[in-house]
Image (cartoon, rainbow over all chains, first blue to last red; front, side):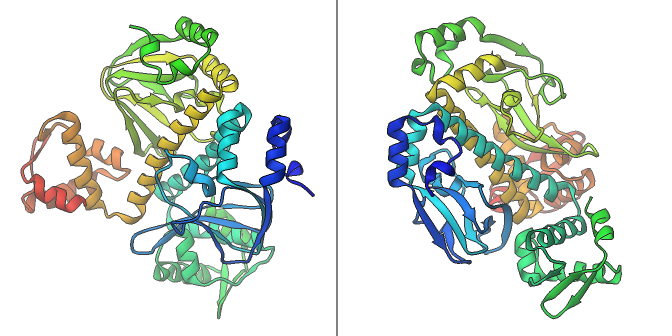
Length: 218
Length: 218
């Protein structure tokens, strides 16, 4: 198993660049809960996920959070290499939501590749465009979509990700994903329960009427 | 006067690329109110502003608006060339807020340059990072900053842009910039007037206590 199979434009690199990548890319594993980017010091580089899940989020000065996007198998984490992109002037945090395995291309190696290889530079561009698209989608959601629709969509997405209709997640955590407050989440979930869409029990939210929830989320 | 003086990385192009740019870049003028991008059909290309002002904004299905960022002299308008960037999957509108003069590099020329010249590709990256930074700033504002602070900051920015303390702008228009409703803007402006920060007269908002407004906006 080598980086050659996982770096999508490996065959667009020169022989020397391929050798450099073979030599410096490392396969790493981090346990669930690891902050891989955003503690202010580290710059881990370009990451290619092999298994697991990352969450990219933003925090306010008061410690409030909102989820920007998530990364899964084969996804590439660009902002963990933001130290080499001087025009990126915002901070995001990236945390492993599950035990996660990934290839890491060190920042100076990725920088060298971008500066010299037009395919890598254009690929970086593509990655940034994809993340930009996700953040613009979020802006749309926050601006024009009411909270009940966002919460319904979030619950459905979580069920898909976890492959279950019984979610083990606190109201506090949902609030952090949606950039809201715990009380607001609790109030809306109770409303969903009254409407027969979910069942709330200690520490668990069970989806009981998926169709109704889907109708609401659209 | 030629594109050579205005395209920031002109000297990083090959002789052939420079000649191509000389031949195809055109100097254009559009009157205030022109929609240069986002009517669904046109893809005008990479634009370099020489004078005037562009506003980039988003609209909801119901026609609500929010300003994403603005572009001034020397700024480069990247998303007007979004047709050549397949990973950009969101729509923004770009409108001339003043009579505006700009160099336009046609999309297929810009594409050719990006695909072949690593400096152009990296420059595109830089541009995208800058716009991304502006949008992330906006997300922060919307998520964590209260409306009074955002309105105060907007009034001060407008005054700086227009070089006056008397703003000729409707409450409707302010609402469109901030992604809010006219009534919300009117209510807050009346509150600002009660607090002695502005004076509201027919069609005009006059800043009378800039310091207080600045304190609020921070």
